[in-house]
Length: 97
Image (cartoon, rainbow, N blue to C red; front, top):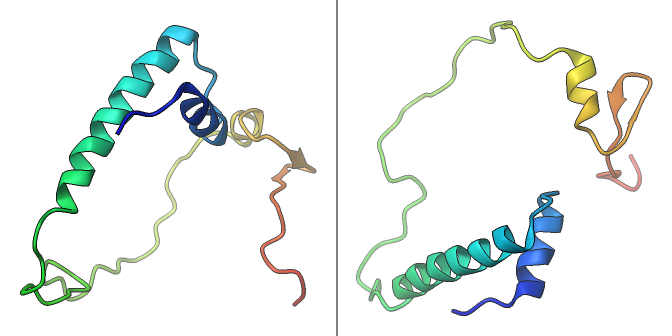
């Protein structure tokens, strides 16, 4: 699947990546190749394969919460598109509660 540069620019903008023209071209080639490989999966006949929700037999993957060191708040906020009073501001998930 041959991607155009406008699509790559759109994906880069969604990922908030600033790419040079050379990087855009390289990403266009790489993403096109990945999509070609994925499209090959569409050709696989899976009619006789039962649907699965989980491919490995894990019983419980829960663990106790543990406090661990993380990035300083100031450094995290430097990378946030919008923040206020020390918190990252995001679009509302629910219109009403």
